[in-house]
Structures are given as structure tokens and as C-alpha cells.
Length: 355
Image 1 (cartoon, rainbow, N blue to C red):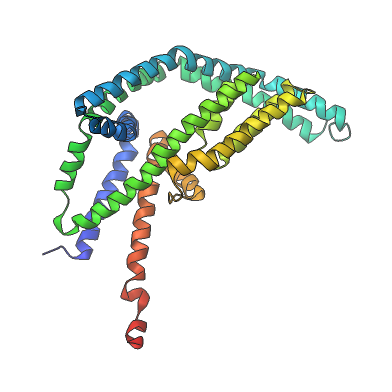
Image 2: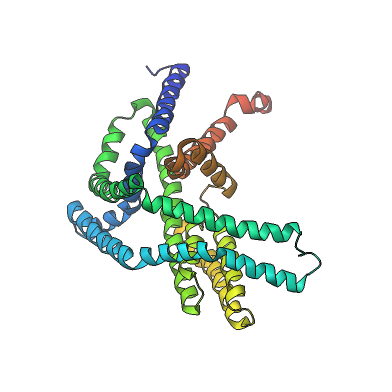
């Protein structure tokens, strides 16, 4: 006989509290395992596709690992040093850029940019703050012994965890399915399938879109000759998972830098703007429909709220688990809403009156 609803709610509530407390106290410890699990989840369809081509799971995992190692080495030798160098340089020249903006505004609008003007003082303050805080942050990350050790541990533990999870992914899913309570197994499988579809559409799909768009923006801006094009492309691609925000932030940053660098060369400025317009056209008409789908179920406002709450409560690990948890809550909420609409609580006695 199944447990009463009140007893089930008690046990599931206890499980949820244990999970939250674990994340709270072990957030930093769990970071490599969360990252490794996310990588394994992202690459599982690739391994499944290789298995359908006739490779064993071990061979498929080995192929993915070799390709990943070569990609990581390429990034470490070519992309990451240039990215860090451009980011440091951008922080250093920020006061100069704001000074140029101040001089431009003084020339064009002298009445509002006098010496005591709040706008002028704000521009100077913003530039100095970016240089001081940005440089301080980068120096702290790069010079801290603990930070270096943590980075090394991530580079060692995350790949190992990802490889082992990818190798045993199907076996782990089957084992978890065997442990499901029998009375509720069909419902849990249905919810898990819906959550997986939502996550697959959003994380795998949007992750691929972010990589493609970030690469496109960085390469196109560097070909145009824009300084810090790699950083701008990286930032624009990184925040593309929030609709319109990536193009808005990246476009504003790129066009602002283009104005300073190419002032008077309207062709180059137009090319920079055209890069982001074309990127939005490609994303909206090709990449997102093909890779993400038309209905993911994660509203941008709900996504931002989840990232803010989990980031505040659990730090960086919270931000990593925010999207999966938000997707799961969304699926469960839609399921609960469907159950409610079919219940006597919602329908009342109106159906009996019409019969």
C-alpha cells in the first residue's frame, strides 16, 4: 500500500532540505563534480551517436576525451592567453576611453560638461573604478596561491569526473530508475523525461549557440580590426543564453569601442554594428530554432531570478545549478498546474451539475 500523501510530502521535504544544506556547506567542494557532471551531460548525446555508429562506450568516451584534450591544449596555447591579455589591457585603458568620451562631450556640449558637472565627475570616477577594481580582481585571481591551487584542482578533477560519468552515464541512469518507488515510477519517469528535454533544449542547445556566436563575434571583430574584439566576442557569446542580452551588451560595448577607435571611419563602425545585426539574424532564424527549439519553458525573467537567488545563496556553484533547478521547478510546476486543473478543487461540482 502506498504511503499517505502527508508522509510522502514529509520525506520529500526532508530530502530537499538535506540537498539545500549540502549545497550550502559543501559548495566549493562540489564545484569540480558539478562541472564534471555538466560536461558529461552535455557530451552524452555525442557518445550515444558514436555508439550508434558501431563504437563501444569505452571507445566513444576515448574519442571524445582525445578531441577534448586537443581542444583544451589549443585554447590554453592560443585563445586563453590572448583573452586574458586583452581583458587586462581593456581594464588599463578604460580611464583613457572615458577621458576621450569626456573630451568629446566637452567639445560638443560645453554647457553640461563644466568642471563641476556631476556627469563629468561620474565619467572620471567610473573609469578610475574600472581600472582599480578590474585590475585588483585580475591580480587577485592570478596571484593568489589558493586561487592557483583551486584552478589546478579544477583542471585535474573536472576532466576525470567528466570521463568517468560519461563512461557510466547510461548505467547510472538505469540504476537510478531501479531505485524509484514503484507506485510513482511512471510519473517520476515522465517528469524526468520532460526535465531532460527542457535541459537538453536549453543547456545543450544554448551552450552550442553561445559557442558558435561567441566564436563568430570574436573572429569577425578581430578581422575588422577592433581592439579587444576577442574579449567583446567572448562576453557577447557568454551571455547569449539570456535572450537579447548578449547582443545588447556585446553590441553596445563593441560599437562604443568602435566609436573611439574608428571615429570618422563610418564604414568600420557600420561593419561592427553589422556584425551584431547579422549575428542576431542568424541566431533568431537558424541557430535557436534548430538547436534550442521553439518552446524551452524557461522565461528570461525566471532564469535571471533563479541565477540571482542561487548565486546569492550558494555562490558560483549555485549559479551552475540554477538553470537545471529552474528547469526542474518549471516542469514540476506545469505538472502540478495540470493536476490542479483536473482536480475537484478546481472543477468543483460544476461538472456534476452539467451531467
